Image (cartoon, rainbow, N blue to C red; front, side, top):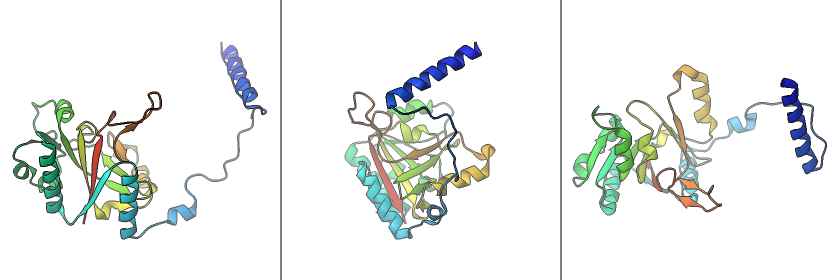
Length: 230
């Protein structure tokens, strides 16, 4: 059976090579270098450049972004948008920084739920019916316009994946330049330190896998705000 399986593999690969009109490669290619080259590891932007590049990249894929002075200003911004949207349900992560936003008082017409704070609530369903989700970024990367959100008991992934509109708060000091700045520390910390999920968000949900028709909001929030704080 093993010989027959390997023979089928050879026939399959030979067929691909024939269609590509070149000889089949049978020697493993050399790989003189692994990982990012030294010049890329040293590449960096100033804090202001990071903010400008992040915002430009984020907007280029249909995201909204603002820079606010502090968490109080972020809370007011979210409250204003919630009133415009007529939001009735808001779900936020259970983070001390997000508690200072004061959304309960600022958006009295909405029910503000704190993730995993009540054992009687089916939280995935609550996130799915929420008009707005609010999360705190663990990091962000300017070169690709990407936000990093790690899962934890008080930071359920559903908060960033299921609501109609998502607000991501990014402390300015957590905004880096390159993707490696987020990946290397996780690799160095080891498997045991990894959370259940690490999510890289680069704007609103975009899907074109159905007849190449670009659709917004199929696999996640269709409207995403990135608020750079500080």
